[in-house]
Image (cartoon, rainbow, N blue to C red):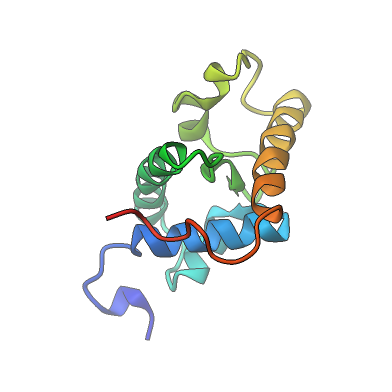
Length: 134
């Protein structure tokens, strides 16, 4: 039975975070559809928007722990770049990026940010920091 068959609006943030940490440790990004599938959902725009809204809080908590963002690992299948919400959410601007949100320049920037996240999680073993604080 998929989660859509029960009255759960979307996965628990800790579950989403765990999938993203696993992707970071593996050195891969996930498409929105792939992550929703891992969580037991079909891809729909409302589910994708709910997932994106959750990412802000996941990254806010990660920053408090001194961890790099995880939202940069969630990308469009078509071009491997995060959607508009990631770009307007502040990370690109905070890092001084003022280029386009699509194309080769954006892809280079995203790969650099993702590399930081991959390196952080690949340098850690065990499960330290994988659950949200109380």
